Every structure is written in structure tokens, then in C-alpha cells.
Length: 519
Image 1 (spheres, rainbow, N blue to C red):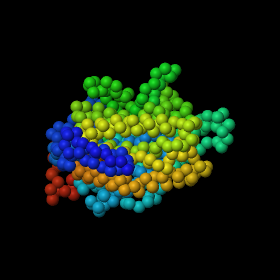
Image 2: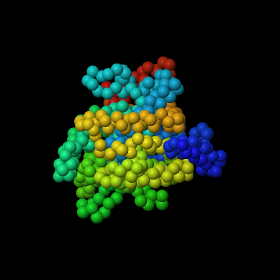
Image 3: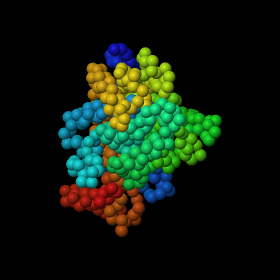
Image 4: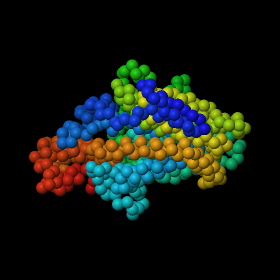
């Protein structure tokens, strides 16, 4: 048990915590301060910033002026790499999402889904029962509704894809991670055969591709999203996956961020070393998964667009600093862009374990040291910027679990049981339980504030609107970001009545007809 004293960025009274894990809290106890013009140009849809690109976009709503403050600061989820031990990260997240569900139902019993909004029915076709075709139910509490960015490295990057790009629940991600682990970590029993085949890298590559290609469709896809492409709707939860990039002869190597959104180049003094800005290439989801997990023990590097990509664990095993810098640069002139950062480690490898002295697990100590250095750096930055920083990392019980352990084949039950037992013991610690509850309360509060703005519908479900009277419309191809934007259009371009008592039902039917993802 350690005691940590923290001081506010402006030198005001410090807060002292006694906790066995790393945690930084620098937020002052005050309500959100409304900023007249929050500088978040990167959150604006590219069709609005550049009207000449694609179809025209509607003007901002004059019917209801939403306060952008709940959206001005971002919440981030960062996942370290750790091989099979990243199963522990998912178990920690499952505990957090259970706490979130309890807070949501306590705050509002009607909020049975994290997509819930008191302003509009975001899930008009959701019945809450298993679908006849076996597809996933939309109800539940999804990490993609609580975090603006989900980032990860190596196997943490695989989880980031499942939670961020594919918008899975944690329980769904756990089941898929077990299947992926069986494909990636299962290896021939003979050491000599493993040496000759390099752990059968080709077969593992094909298994990984097949596994990602066979995943269920993306939950609540935006109309413009392609099912197998990593790029997604930039107005929703964004995914960042870390890798390393080199030229053909490997004479030059640099960190590379796979982004699910386009990233314009910034020419400010704050961004002297930006990571590969610009529009994202048309990477398939499985290619990004392959690139971030291309550690020498598992896969060869992957060749794409005249470059090679491979695992970044030895450089960016803890990606939290990369994503903090990325989000801060996206906010441009704002130095107060982050509200909360949740970082989850892949299990501490320190200890007197002779098995860590050689083989693939000789990297564990090095990766742990790298992650801890990044943690200290982010902790300092959190106090400078004033955002909430949570770091969860199982400290005891995982030292003897190798990064590629998978016993017995094919299910790996013994390995998973060891990880689960160590994680459950960790989560039962009093300090950990308290911080899980505190983190959940912050995330639920932020979601509740955002759900009271019209911007929430697109963030949560990808819904956009088109004019339902297109045959007589001067802007038949215009896209509207919110329900109120379309309402303004109907009133100003089609002379529709306001949604008063006499016309409410008629206007609501027109708005429902305008949904881009409705029947």
C-alpha cells in the first residue's frame, strides 16, 4: 500500500490517496465551465469544413442551440500490449462496465442502453430480445459510447479494434479474444518444429485473417462505413492502433498510428513530430490487426503500400502517451482537450521468476519497464493539463504467465484460469474497487450530459438525415447531422409548420422518414 499526494495544477490544496495502484486526480470540484467557442475543428465533419468534397452539408441548427461543452473534452481508453495476458485487461474492463451499468440504472432506470437519450429514440427498432437471425442485440452498455478514443498496441491493439472500430460489448470482445488467442498463441508442441517453422507464421497469419473476416458485422454502422475497412465515421468513437513502419530495406523505422479517421497536417510549433498525418489508407481491419501484432515470435512483418509494418511493443507497449499527444494536437490551440484517460496494463512482469531470463518472455521485464516510464510521463502530463488519469495493472499473480502461453490446447483453459484468478484477486482490493466506481461515475456523468444534446444520436448510432421531401427539395442530396438540422430545413425550405401540438406527429413522421439508417 502506497500513499500518493497530488497537487492541483494551479497550486491549490492537494488530494492524498492511499492505493496499491497508480492513479492521478487533478480535476477541481467544480461544474463544467461553458466555453463560448471551444476550439475543436478536427471534430467537424470534413464535408462541413470542405463543402466542395462530396455532397453538401446543412447549416448548423437555428432551432435548438446545443451547448458543445460536454463534447469539448475527450475521454480516452488506452490498452497496453501483453500477449495472452491482455485477457486481464478485458476482465478489468468488464468490471468497469458492470459498475457503469449500475450507475446508469441508478441514475435513470429507463436507460437500459448506453445509446439512450431523453431527446430522441436512438434505437427505434430495438426490441431487447435475441434476433431471429442470430445477430447481436443493440441493448447494453458499450465502451464506444463512453470513450472518444480507444487505442492499443499489439494484442491491446486487437482489443481496441474489437471495442472501438467494431463497437463490441466487453463480453463479446472476451469471447472473440479467446478465439483469436487460440489461433495466435497455439503452437506446435515440439520445440524443434517451432524453431524450423518460426511458429508457423504463415498459418497463423491466415488464421488471424480468417478470424477477423468472420467476425459479426459492426454494430450500428454509419451509412458510409464499409464493413471490412478500418476507416470509420469520424464523428463517432475513434480507434488508434500503434505499429512500427519501415522502408523496404529496414534502414528507417518509425512509429506509425493506424487511425480510423482522417488526420489533417498541423503546422504549429506544438507539432514538430506528428505521426503520419493525412487521410487514412484503405487498410482492411485484418491488415491493421496483423500489423500491430506482427511480433517476431508470432508473425513476419506485413507489406502494404510500399512499406513494412510490425509490432510496436518494444517501443510503444504503453500507447497512452501517443494518444494523449494525438488528442492534444487535434484540439490545436486548446491546452485543455482531455477530460479522462483510462490506461490498462498487460500485467506486471517484475519478480524473481527464472523463466523470464531467456526466450520470448525475456521481453516481459523490458516491456514492463517501458510501460512504467510512459506511466510516469502521462501522470506528470495529467497534472499539467488537469485531466483525470486512471491506471489499472495487475501487479501480482501474472509473473509466471508467458506472453504466448496457451494451455491446454485448443481452449487454453488453464492459462485463462490463472489470469482470471490473479485479476479477480486484484479487483477485490479495496483501493481498486473504489477507483473502478469513481471512474464509472465520471464516465456515466459525461455520457448523460452528452445524451442531452442532439449531437449524441450520430455519435451513438451513426444516424444522419436526408430530406424526406427530396422530389421537391432545392437540396435533395444534402446531409443533416442532427434531427434539429433537418427540422430547420423543413421549416425554411419547405414551409413546414413548427412542431406544436397540432403538427407534432406530422413533423415527427417526416423526421423519422429522413433517417439514413431507417427502413
